[in-house]
Image 1 (cartoon, rainbow, N blue to C red):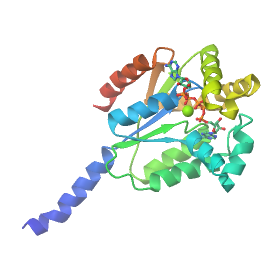
Image 2 (cartoon, rainbow, N blue to C red):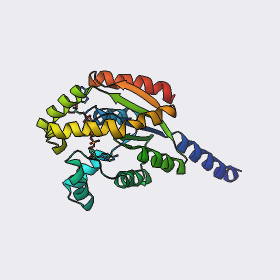
Image 3 (cartoon, protein in one colour):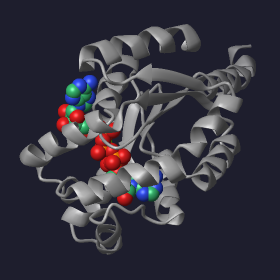
Image 4 (tube, rainbow, N blue to C red):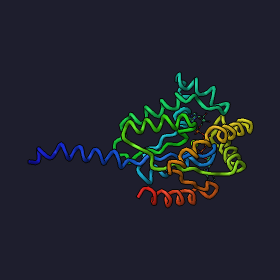
Length: 213
Ligand code: AP5
Ligand code: MG
């Protein structure tokens, strides 16, 4: 009898394990605190964190073919082509992530085209997004944060005010339109990212808990 029900139970369990996965995007201008909050949220909710920026910086450090292409773009504050960002994400979601409750995508998607294709990727896996977190922070504050970080970490894209301003402009021109796209899907969670790291985190958790319940 047990042998008869086992296959049904397995299908049932698989179905619900896929559907309970929580996939969250964290977005916002350069220096808004995406990486800082994504690490804490990953720990809090048992998510795996992926930052396309970190993957690209790692490739640059290792001088891979991807790294060479990425460096020419990133150091000037430009985006890498969509197909590069999408292949990083494809590889990440195709990997095994045992024990994870879902993923937190930091700095991806960054264009409407990335957002559309990402939807299809998730759909093909029978999965969907749970929330799109937008950290909003005034330009003056993000600039100050990046200039302080430049002294500590030495990221080339933080090194000159012209590059910082260029990144901010690209964010507003190219990335911001995705906010409306996710708002129309009822996924937008807007967070004031100008408060302390702890306050920002507790506000996100409070809003996400209501949504994920
Ligand atoms: P990416 O690495 O994603 O850079 P970014 O979007 O410019 O954002 P940052 O990493 O600079 O800032 P953050 O929002 O993570 O803030 P953080 O937590 O570090 O991308 C880099 C580049 O890669 C892009 O420009 C592009 O070229 C390319 N790229 C990446 N993804 C791509 C994609 N999908 N498509 C195409 N190209 C892509 O915080 C900043 C600082 O502030 C830190 O020092 C932190 O300690 C501090 N801080 C954080 N929170 C607070 C707070 N609440 N109060 C005070 N200080 C704070
Ligand atoms: Mg970051």
